[in-house]
Amino acid sequence: MGLAHPDVHAPPARVESPPRAPGWKPYGGTLLVCVLATATAALLSPYLEAVNIVMVFLLGTVLVGMRWGRGPATLAAVVNVLAFDFFFVTPRYSLAVTDAQFVLTFAVMLAVGLITGQLTAGLRQQAVAARQREARTRTLYEFARDLSALATEAQVMATGEAFMAGEFHAGVAILVADAHGKLAPRGEDRIRNPMDWAAAQWAYQHGKATGAGTETLPGNEWLFLPLKAPMRMRGVLAIRPGHARDLVLPEQMRGYETFAALTAIALERVHYVEVARDALIKVESERLRNSLLAALSHDLRTPLAALLGLAEAMTLTQPPMSAQQVDIARSIGDEARRLIALVNNLLDMARIQSGEVRLDLQWHPLEEVVGSAANGGRAALGTRALAVDIPRDLPLVQMDAVLLERVLANLIENAGKYTPPTARVSISARAAAASIEIAVEDDGPGIPAGQEEAIFEKFARGVAESATPGVGLGLAICRAIVEAHHGSIRAEVGRERGARFVVTLPRGEPPEVRA
Image 1 (cartoon, rainbow, N blue to C red):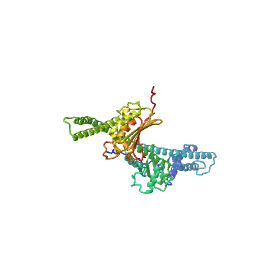
Image 2: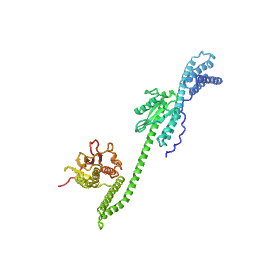
Image 3: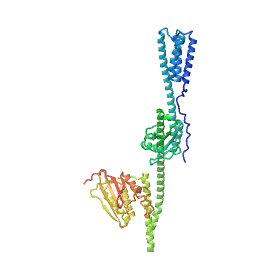
């Protein structure tokens, strides 16, 4: 059952600079403020000296700079100087100046007005930028918070597209790559141009932005940003801006890249959440299967042992049975032995995977273990010839002799199952610098192409639906035992005929043998 889609917070509208009044309005407002400053100064002129009246005009310049910016503030400074000279400096109602000290007053007043207007306008722009950064930070926090609550790739894609479409007022599509490195078809309802799809694939393969506003394929109407996660590329974020000017604004491009980074991290997180969930399900399934196999196998051992005993007892009854009856009893005994061997394999596999098997590691001569396994496998080989080649100077090997004998016996039994009666089987060993290699090979039909690793899986068989008895646990048990010895087992490929299995065990340092 899919997880319910969490509520997505409505994305806030994008924060822009306060709208500027078109054309003459800021300057008309500036002139109005200058008129008001002049009127206020006229009312205060009977009570104040001319030098103090300058402060009223400076206040007007500061207010204009705070409200409309640098241009109107410059106009206000010039107009206020002229108004002060015209109305409050002798001779009045004239721009002539009789007292030279007022020239310095005018210069200082103009300079202070210009500087103050510039500073207030700069502070205003900084305040606007701070509000924009605050709004963008809040938006990123809300976006990251929403992504952190999602558990599937589809939820991340849907939430990311809805959130960014509202934030950027643009068309948005998140394209995620499949296992073969191809972008998934999601978004076809918005991205219809094959050239746009080619640009998106290029951005994914090369890990670089492409499309509108970039140097690569700039003719596309979409901007494609690669979704780079810490581990690998996750896909492409496709954005079709609502306004062309958005592509040349550094702040807007940084916003695109930041949202792309958050989306990539969220996609990687949900990917590994799914991987972890699948691994947990697999582990629990394996544990349950092993438990069932162990319980079933344990319950089968007693009736199978009784069946084998009864089959052997039938051959000893008096009066003696007929030859046909004896053959039937022996067939029952053979099948019972085969089932007992199968049950033992199931139990061994369950014990090995549950960690219940403890290795009894001792230093043993390899020829003894190989000889014991060869003697035990004679019955499985039938008429097939078996050759053993173990060098006399082979060093001792640290191993669990019983379990390693089981490995070699299983390999010999496999050779008996899958080769014709005239085949030849050989066991050889050699010492390498840091390991001991044991090879079991035959000249039979060999291993099917591409199955060199699959045959070591549980319940895997060399020939599907074959009449050859067995359930495909022998090689799986071999690999589990060898790996418990910190070794490896492999099936060699590229042979013209026959199969060859190589068991590699760590060589170690055998103890000194005193004469």
